[in-house]
Each structure stands twice: as C-alpha cells, then as structure tokens.
Image 1 (cartoon, rainbow, N blue to C red):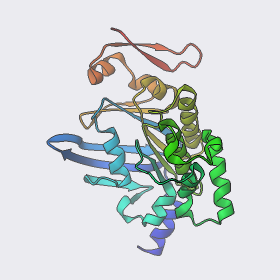
Image 2: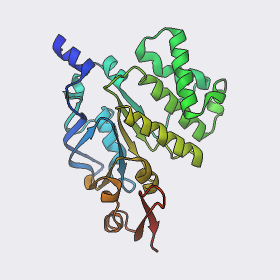
Image 3: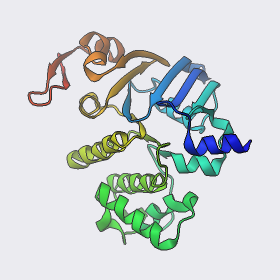
Length: 272
C-alpha cells in the first residue's frame, strides 16, 4: 500500500460517503440473503436497517464489516475494505454484534478496556476513556462485577461501552455498526442506547443499526432502509419509508400509521 493511500486512510476522501456497497450477492443453504444489493451510507447520519427475520439485515452488516464474504464490492471512506490494514480499520470501524461468546471471568471494566487494544494508549488514558464510555451507557456501577454474572442487558451495555471505547480516537472517519442493540434492554436503556447512537451520528459518525422495533427506528433514525428477500423495499426518511402498504407487503400484517403528538414522527399500530 502506498504512502499516499495510507495517508488517505487516515484522512479520508472529501465526500460524505462512509460506506459504499455495490452489487452484493450472497446465498446460503439455497436461500438468497443478498440479491445484487447496493447501498451508500453517509457520515453524520443514523441509518436503520429494518425487515422481517431472515431478510438479510444482519448479513449485510457482516458483509460490510468483512466478517462474511460475498460477491460484489465494499468501500470504506472511498477505499476497498480489503485494502485497509486491520490495525487501521479497527480504529475507525466498531461493531456491536447481537451476541458475544465471551466467557472469561473479566470484570465489566476490563471488558470495556479491551476496546482500547487497537489504540495503543497509555494505561491511565485507557481507563479514563473506558470510564467515560461506561458512564455514557450507564454501566459505571457494574465496573467491578464479573462479566459472566451479569444479565443479558447488562452485558449488552458493557459491550456497547467497549465499542465506543474502540472508536474514541476515530476522528472524522468513524463507522459504528449496531446489530439489534436494544434487544435485551429495558425501556430506559433502549432509549439511552439509541440517544448515544444518535449523538454519535450528529458528531459526524456513520451509524448503522439493525433493529426490529419500527417505532424506535422512526423516532431516532434519519433514514430507514427496509429490506426483504435480500432487496431494498423502501429507503428514505421515516415518514417516507413507513407506509401502511409497504409494511403490510414486507411483514404480512396490516397496520395503520399515525403521528407522534409532540415530535411528529410516524407511529406504527397494528390494524388487526
């Protein structure tokens, strides 16, 4: 990789596109998960990926971050994902998966500090950043707790703090991918997690979340991409993407759409 390309990886090209996926195709077990799928993700925007179970949402995240290979191309900040040195990519791309297989008896504080491993920071700075991110997601009280003893929701929030720690030095080139980040959370922590994600986007990050709750997506996301059978069925602002016709077609259930009485975002209610 040339010195010029290395510098560009650090600074990024002068455009708003953080991720460009082109003509992605993937089939597993006879099922098409991505069907000639193309999508651009912008900086400074929270994009929610919606769709029924098995629609291809989590698969798309895994392909974009390189966990799963597919036909087609993925560029990050204008450069092919495979050209990014892993150590550099780890500083700019953070992924919160649905589940973690971590079983070691680390404390919550130690798990969060693992996020700083790619950053090569002094120990004192690592601890300070980890504490700030734990406070952001409301897990400072869990610091001395052993990870295996925590509930699913507590583990989810600890890992969110770990990913935020990992991205703490990303600067203007920052991608945050969250796969069902609210699945194990109670009401207050659901909204706090999405507020944190929203603030990351407002600070310039490209934030992509996979989420099943249409109303939470409508409240916090700038853009909704509804996927089914590996293809985009709707793409736009919440009031554009969430129509009764689209939802019934994609999810197979009739709904009616109303508006939040204060903030005006669409609210989806079952019609049957």
